[in-house]
Image 1 (cartoon, helix red, strand yellow):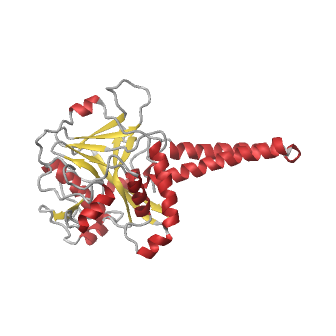
Image 2 (tube, rainbow, N blue to C red):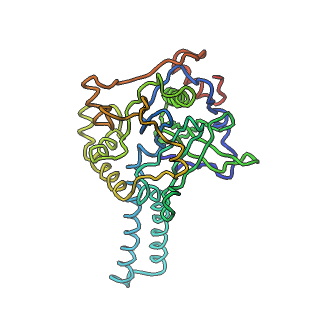
Image 3 (cartoon, one colour):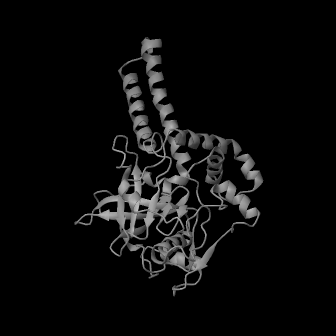
Length: 353
């Protein structure tokens, strides 16, 4: 589920469950450190990370296009009942057409305003030197060249509110990491998700949080390699792989062949959405704080480092890139088993820290 479809609590207190599952920035939350596919680039100055909707934008694009079909159906119905066959129309028919158009227009705007004619990606920048997060939120259409797109800032300190958010869906429990900003009364003024969504289990989410904390607190030295580096210039092949993995990261050949018509359709939705968008533009102030030394040994991806799903899979087959690069947290003194630790975090009144 796209986190933008979930109430973000603006004007209300942070949900009690989220507050009880607040994530510390200076202590491990589990035994493992691992990236689950959230990284664009890493260097000694900053790390660019995906937002949660990034992996699932084909679903949002599909919802938008279906809503547009609903709008067209409303106008077509009006044409049939008022122009082509006026004797079959009436006040009830006009109201029905209006309701249809208004309803689907609202859905199209809500789901499509950040997918079509927006940005190809909305990265979240972890700047370890400034101890801040910069999150590009929305395309700015009319501005001076040095202003860039609409960008939020979040400090990386003990007062920042990073929480696990839980949502119940028809497919089970859904978790993602969310940052909240609150006013003096404790009510939320802004919120955004980081990384990706996790279904059913907190094990990988906690390992992911350890990964980001490792980078911000220790730097890129000894940081495990990410699952992959997402491309900043998505090709048709990459869009297809995003759609395929959207139906399950692991699947048998028979399953994937059976799902191929849906995979191709959803890939088209993603391709169409990206084709209408442009690359994000960081504000000049952020760019000035994001200078990377030419000789930075941790600047990745570069050289022969694979980028994207396809190149990474081929590199793994050649044994040029690890399948699963992770490390144990040397300062972890809690439950040694990752799943057992995750089950403690998942409790409504967690007893893990």
